[in-house]
Image 1: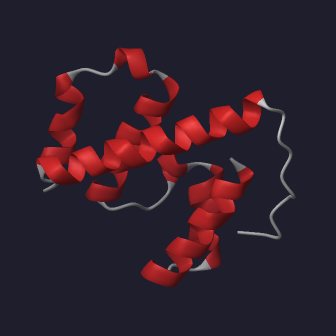
Image 2: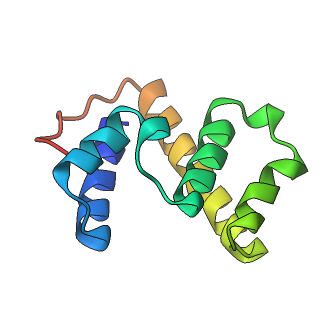
Amino acid sequence: MAHHRAGLARLVRRREGRDAAWIAQLLQDWRSADLTDRERALLVYADKLTRTPAAMVERDLDPLREVGLSDEAILQTNLVVAYFAYANRIADGLGVQLEEPSGP
């Protein structure tokens, strides 16, 4: 997760032009970060899919559609979230230790 967190910080900084304080807040506690409705809907979905995948129901897609995501975009989001969960479980299951990131 530390590896993915550092990658997220680099991506957000490059693509969104957000400052370091915003990125630190996002990484510390995304629920209290200043997010767009779209960003918040995506993170709520990703969090639930990651933490409690068996609890997912069709209505979990409604907030994504309400912020303008197409079914194709929702599928792509699902695939990315599921892939990262899969990759993390492989690394964790094998005891892989990564270097600590140098910062957000």
